[in-house]
Length: 143
Image (cartoon, rainbow, N blue to C red; front, side, top):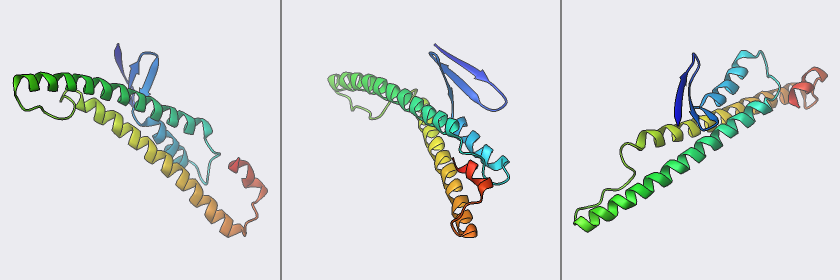
């Protein structure tokens, strides 16, 4: 059973007991960086949540691909028995879901890479500015 919810921020899909946010976890990480003056503390919970969302989309994508392949193989066998040319790939009605999950996975990966790249760049600049000695005020941010 699939239920759709709408909010101001995102559209969510509830699958079983999981709620999927289509690429929103990674966006939240980047928004935290944008809102901060310098560099916020490392958001381990946000990174983990983004990785969990990627895994959820990967699992859902795997299920959809396996189901589409089963249906596609059955249709291909029927077409071969009838003597017609079999068509390749998943059925047209499955393609939007496949594309959506793939796009969500890619977006979250890009957001994670951007989050970590931004943090690395800020730390690299800090290291050059302080000659490798960190001020005590910034040490808590780096934990």
